[in-house]
Picture (tube, rainbow, N blue to C red):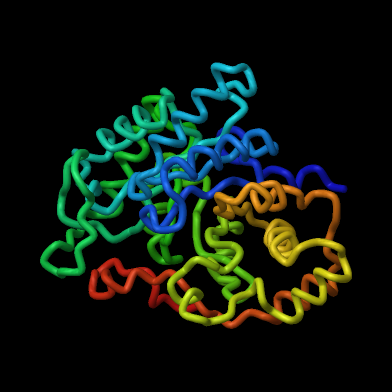
Length: 322
């Protein structure tokens, strides 16, 4: 087994290939207590990669459990890879550093391993207290130049508050803007990638530019409202279910292994103990090239996350060619 598949090399350090996602649909699919417990279970199961964001509202419970495990001697801070993300309402260059400092306070650490621009779509300035504005009103759109926001991301790196900086939900053209202006290159892009949405053009472009790629909602987000309304996702796909039987692995494990061999890291979210353990147990088998091609053939170019409320924003990223 190629142990290199367990991690991806970054500009600074390494990122474990499997992490725990902490987005709970704003508490609808996982309470703060459940997420805190999930982080503890994940650490005990071997996870060392935790994906957070300002907007998720879970940084506090993640930080509390990480601190607890560090104090108990189970892990050291250097063992853990923590990602967080700059929210849309903090794109004002005057707010970028402040948001990261607030995130560090919530996460109970003096640095993160990755700080990403969550979206290219800036929104009306908002402070760091109170409920976040998730406005659908076009009057709340803001367009701070991406170059100016990136310069502040670079400053966060230069101050030692993050070891790596990167992007999320950017198009190829928007990513090129960053490469054209940067003095510190983005280490990573986090985008939706599933067997039903390979996002192949963007994945190939970013890897070709020396970036790592992280797949969010890798299992097709079974708790997404579309799925809850009855639409089937990859976890129920007949091809993947048959492969699961042949391999003696769950469908989720087949999908996660596929995405790792596809060249990405994965951040499945769960608060269920058995699934947390299952999702990291993907390094004792491999998919053949034929199996990889079979899964790739399932691609529908069907995106789940498209932030329709920002549809008319000048920097809206989800209409780009696939």
